Length: 238
Image (cartoon, rainbow, N blue to C red; front, top):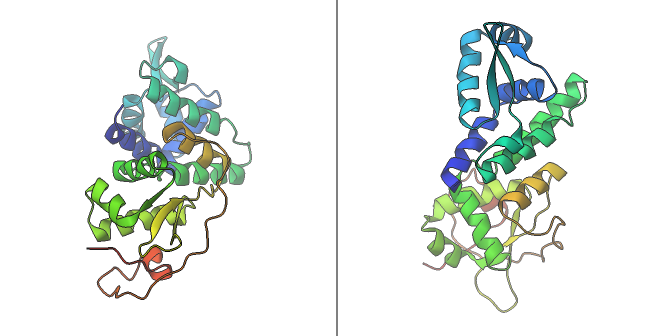
């Protein structure tokens, strides 16, 4: 499975409605289409759209019983694609942690949503793999060149990763340019386990990043909404 297909899997899972559906099936429910829609409080047509997406990634399956089609959870280990089976197994293990309490289940689904949206864009996945392969730190100009990514686009992705606790900036002693560094301050054990299954590496956070020092620079051309830029200005060599 290449990163583009994996990104599609992440986008399919990044839906609170589909997470509720998957949680219901993962915890043992086996229901016909109409009863399943009623249990979820949605229309049969809306359910059909979600089930079609989930079928594509072997997350659910159909069984014919007494001339009625029942929907059940697809066993993750039976998926022929090993990487897809790994992702489905991660999701299944996460969903069965849910308690019967509605609020606790909603909180768990929010954590799963936040974890998978790290990898919905293949370019962010590639960025994290590059950092991991280069010892966890790279000069921003080198990172930009290897990703073939524009300055504003790079800032956009770094901002998302920084807000999720995965990267930070630091200025090595004696250097004129900032570096991007993996800091891996995971928001939850589910974030950590998904990162390690996709990117690899140890399941323990790195040491805190060194104190960031910044040099004055003109950042007027950058998006003012980016917290990464607003909080930590960094010059790139053109």
